[in-house]
Amino acid sequence: MFSFYPFVGYLVMLTYRPRRVSCPQHGVTVEHILWANGKSPICTPFKIFLSHWAKYLSWQEVARQFRVSWKNVFESVEEHVVEYGLKHRNLDNINAIGIDEIQYLKDTNI
Image (cartoon, rainbow, N blue to C red):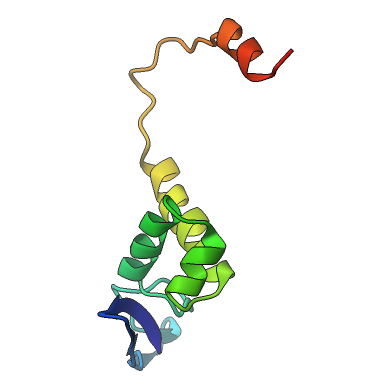
C-alpha cells in the first residue's frame, strides 16, 4: 500500500503487490516499482509534493495537513530531494568562494 497525492482533500492510497520471481542464478527477486523506492510507503511523486510544501510550512504542519508522519516528511526532504540534489550537482564552473565579513558581523549583533 502506497500513499499518493491527496485529491480534493481525500487521502489516496495505491494498493499493489510487486511480482516476485524465483531466479536460479540470483534467487528470489522483487519487481522494481517506478513510483516507489525500497519499502517506503510514500510514492516518489508524493515525496516531491511533500518536499515542495516543506519549503513553505513547518515539517510538522506538512505532516498534519497531508496526514503523514513527521518522519515521512523528513525522509521526503532529506533522503529523496536533498540526496538527489547532492548527487546531481555540478561544481565544475566554481573558481572561488567569497565571504562577506561585514554583513556577517551585522547579523551577529556584536
